Length: 481
Image 1 (spheres, rainbow, N blue to C red):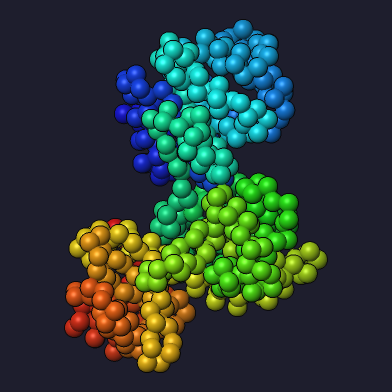
Image 2 (tube, one colour):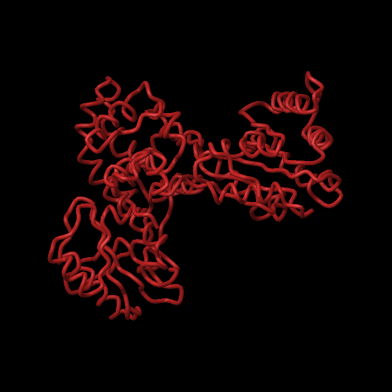
């Protein structure tokens, strides 16, 4: 197996998949697809792979077809050692020349969606190359294509797409999980700071160095100052990143509507009706932007664990949540360079509307990743859920519902970021369990769980020990698995 370079942090599984593809002796391993949201380090990984294997690497840019062919011709000429550039008149011509210059080894074409935008027929031309009798069958080369436009990459191998069924590798490079991100930022031993930081920048590796000049908060007391000097500082690239992400990913023309949808979700209006009501628009008006935001991976639609047909929307990129809930609402301060005032005005919203829901999501991720150790088996679903209580005409929100692969409720959990959790929180979970049992859910053996960002009362700790209630505080959330 090709050794992972020392300068590649984590990404062990991704590197192993790429190395297996690059080194596979199987004749069927000719074509692979790598995708993922922007700034996740795909180019860094593929460049490292090209260097390690001596492969050919070409990064596309937003150009006309003619200019892309010229750039490709220069890259091929450099690979062939002839200097100058090959005169390429079409992508059919370019692909013929590519396999002539690289008859064996690895070929990487990065940001393929840029090429497809200018040359839509390229996907069909790649199909012809990869099909029986195509150029690729006459060589031992392996072709990897990569892209950040999730909607484009998602459709590349789906339905009746020309390349469907041709790939032997389909690798999605995700953001780092919350614990790996804490290690990457050097805050793994400061879990409260790690949660706050992840609520802003998430697990996107590019934000650690390039976008903030390698500036990281020194400790919890420095977090507010770090926000002011980086995220809220117009001279730092992270300041504009959320807006650029929306423009790059969606190609949105009605930008105010997209920002309005994201702002509604960020402030807790996370159902279709809630979003429409907040924007004072008919639900039909927000269908298209929601679909686009889902397709490009900026928003996820998450079904309720207990109510069939009910879903909520969640922004998948924390930086966009931060921008929508904090920055956009205090833009009058920011556009005048008053970052301290903007942060002072936005701190309350940040802790309640940003960190609180984000902490709940981290707790769901914790439950999923540690389900076997915590609950004795793999779950089918880990999600939030709503349990109706007819007696009080109210609803009980279950923040972390773990459902079994064969039915049954494995665990019911509540997560609180700012409150010290006590017996009333446990009583609410008990009530939810009883209501679910009355509705026919299998709750025998259901383990109740409290996830507390501010810890637990002594009374709750005593009862938890006696009743096998799971208590997860911040040190446990970030403990070595």
